[in-house]
Image 1 (cartoon, rainbow, N blue to C red):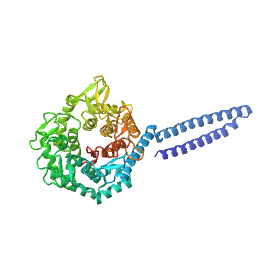
Image 2: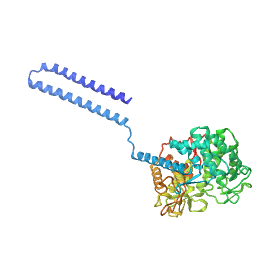
Image 3: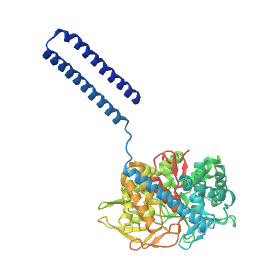
Image 4: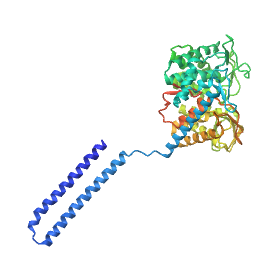
Amino acid sequence: MLKGNRSFNQRRFKEMCLICTLFCLAMTSFVLPLFRQNKTETAILNEVERIVHNIEKRLTQQHNKHIHDIKRVIAVPKLQASDHISEQIATEIRDGMQHAFQAYMRDAWKSDEYMPVTKKGTNTFGGKGLTIIDSLDTLYLMKLSSEFNAAKHFVATEFQFEGQINVFENTIRVLGGLLSAYSLTKDDIFLAKATMVGEVLLGAFPQRIPCGVINTNRPNWCGTQSWANGKVVNAEVGTLALEFVALSRFTHDPRWSDKITAINKYWKKHDNSLLQMNIDPHTEQMSGPATIGGGIDSTYEYFIKLKALTGDPLASDLYSIFEEMIVKQMFVTYGQTTFARAAGSDTLEHLGCFLGGMLIMGQKYVAEGLAMTETCARMYTSNPSGLACDQVRISKDGSIHCKNDLYLLRPETVESIFYAWRETHDQKWRDYATKIWKAIAKHCEVESGGFSDVRHVASRPTKTDKQESWFLAETLKYLWLTFQSDDILPLDKYVFNTEAHPIESF
């Protein structure tokens, strides 16, 4: 339409100029015979020329202004420098994912996790190819096709789910990874394998509160973690909901969602105070500290995420109740530093940094969520190395001090940064993500392949020889997504489980 208007106005300009010229010539032919003196003729001709010149000048000015307005309207915005930087960082992160996974393929294929310094695998969870399953959706989203196809081939032909099984870890990493791969690709092989895993995990429910550990070679055996004194950890109970409910929805089989309904009724009976760390699976009594860090964090997270996944009204009610308690009872501000002061301590765990993203997702306490995310980002930027300590102590003046001098490639801060970016589109969140990525690339990347945990974060980072599977599943994915457009996994259509596996909402 703009192009048509421009052509029309050019024609109109030419036509008006021609009409004016003919008019002036006609006037000249009419007037000249009336005057015989040369001086008079010259004066009249000069006057005619002046009139024609002024008319052409005004028409030209109007035409040029019109063309300028058209150009202003149809001008394509120039790509900003920050857009070029975002593309560059996203490419670097994708290359980092390929660097990490290809090294694992070369040196540790089928092992649970990778030791990049010594170039060998380690079977953290019984040798189920955990890194392969955990990486499926990241590889798919980043269009690392050859790596994804190799991972898919393993799932289809070699993946087994046997032996001793940590119920929580295998639910969020293996079941979650397979369900996410199915949700993204709609390839039935992933749902078939997810169903196989789900059948095994049902063995964790001889009662309402599930076992922490089961073993396919020991039927009816129900165990707990060796360090848990016969009790299950809160998150081991509360962090099955997304995966179990999604599996029921995909298969139209209610056996898994029924387990979650029963557990949520248990939470409802204990919604008069913040939840405690441990649960006796037989008596259902809770004990231990109330916190938002490791061991209980994702129980709260799954209330809001189950609501987002299915609209579950009980999960929605539970989230509203516990969110209010967390903000009112735990949040403090020291100086300019806002954080959740869990269990009466001034210590903040990196694991607790998921909370910023959770509150942003909940929408009622976005300001608190953003403030918490800022504090967690400063855990990185306040350290000379640019990496965060696994635990910090926050002084009354708001300064941050390292307490546990390790960086375990953890995702919680960049997870919240991702939510903060999607909520605000404030460039500072991408700036934080850039700084964190650069620090990881500098101190954690192993030249021959892979990335490693590091110690001595506050002084001289030293690699410890462990590439966590969550680094590929979560940390790199959330970093990469922070530099993508919002239509890549829109948050009104996908819900991330606690291992960053996106599942399409129902």
